[in-house]
Length: 173
Image (tube, rainbow, N blue to C red; front, side, top):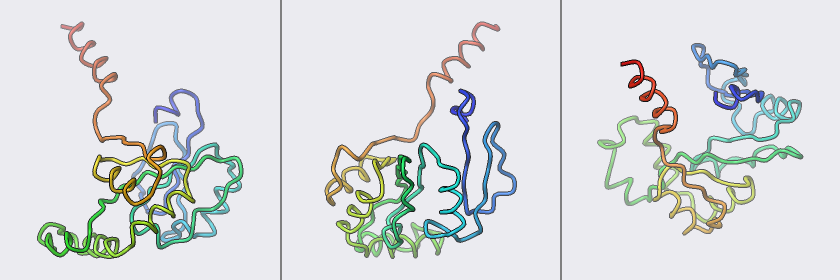
């Protein structure tokens, strides 16, 4: 939304049916459900749009797919959102901790993927990989992804916009 406010053309592409999603200044294109990184409609849409930058939401099981489409002139980055569980950790935590059965199955499957394969997939597919936590960053580097390609972006708040909001509240008193 911030990019759109600065005058950039921003498009959100998803294969998840989110009928209620509205982002000011952002167009939304919904790929046919389940098309994922291999889907022809998604590949064609990206190729025809000629984007400058594409951010892919990826996880451990993404390494089981083919690489994202090659888009000449487009910088492609991954936002890596999966925890890097090992098989022992999954077994120890069990479904009591990972409540959603589908989520548990994905984490269990992900724990069986060799980390070196994951690192090779990420290195071959993306210019850089953003991770949300130090353990994921360390795990990917330990698996063979070059450290300079891993960028830690911890979840948090935009302190500058919060400062402006608090400042306005203080001035209005």
